[in-house]
Length: 275
Ligand SMILES: O=C(CO)[C@H](O)[C@H](O)COP(=O)(O)O
Image (cartoon, rainbow, N blue to C red; front, side):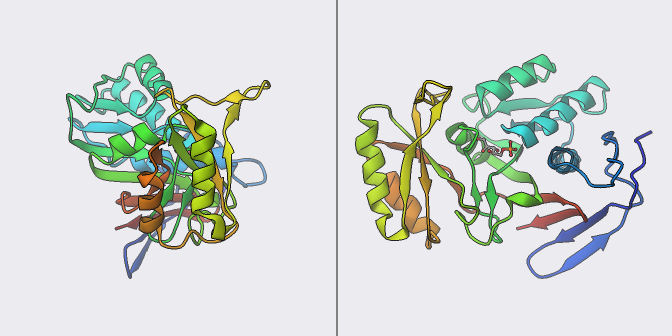
């Protein structure tokens, strides 16, 4: 039996215009995280709630895109658990990073790749920012290229976040828009990226890792330049085109029009928004 929560958890489903509210008497089934004594959930507990809700969309026989990051990790754990319990069968997972590949392997989830499965039924992944139109910024974990390839090949893409990820416009949290670039003359590409958005007060910074400031290297052996904006990026498709037109750029972290469902876990409950 899941541990009872100290208060009722609200699930509200929203599509374009209407809002339906369901009020269950407990958290999503199987969620074992106990409430804090204050009744306030941690960010990680909210991530887990969103992830478990998303896994309710998974059916036996599906080919699944497995996301990357601390929120997606809960979803992958849950899929592994349901497979082990025999509640899900014949799942094939397509991981979006080496880290998720290792996690899924350790859980015994059968894995494949886009070459063998070019069309996926469903992907579940987190995001760094989500705007009201379900456009996303992804890639703070550095896996944006594989995530975009896998999630772009899915019939359904369910995004799972805690409410801190919601923004009015992309870039609105003050966090970076990641761009994966080739290592060759990375500074040249970083300067060109910054110049593209000069009028938006853009600052481009090479992402580093560890104490010695070495460049962060992606699973594809590329670098990441993080773009910080002082002002709204504006037309996302135009910005995307301009970034992708630069020869040293591999991919950027704006996921425009890709998400089909958003699951947000917040202090007041779960909100589900469909496109
Ligand atoms: O895009 C990603 C990794 O490249 C992640 O989905 C994103 O950074 C969200 O991470 P978390 O769930 O840990 O908050």
